[in-house]
Image (cartoon, rainbow, N blue to C red; front, top):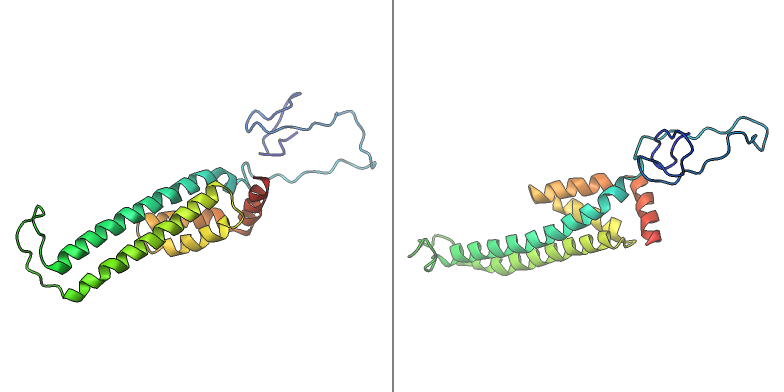
Length: 184
């Protein structure tokens, strides 16, 4: 007999699988088949197959929330340095004195743009993290979109984007995510 959840071999008279803890529904061995033929064979799946989303959803949600914080911090740091270089001096920062100011003054206009982009990216990442942690029905689609956008933010965004696409992009993962979203 095999466990219907993980495919591990079950021996003896047990009610739960020793490997995954899944419930084993055992028919009596002496009972004849109801239709007179041999009992149907269940296809053997690889151990843990079809559980990719369930195993990785919590971790992925937490990573997206952490990535949202990272995007805020990196945006603030980028705004600070761009503003400092665009103004032409470090103004008493550890470098002290005048920096030389070879940058055009129009560069200072990028500071608000960087701030807005950092806020949008962090809100998107936080929404993805929230939707995955709470198993929202729209969370998978939002996560795939955000993962594609995050691929260009090397190295952390690229790694998180690849991980998210690996878990959520296959069609089988969509069915599994929908089943998880319906349960909660």
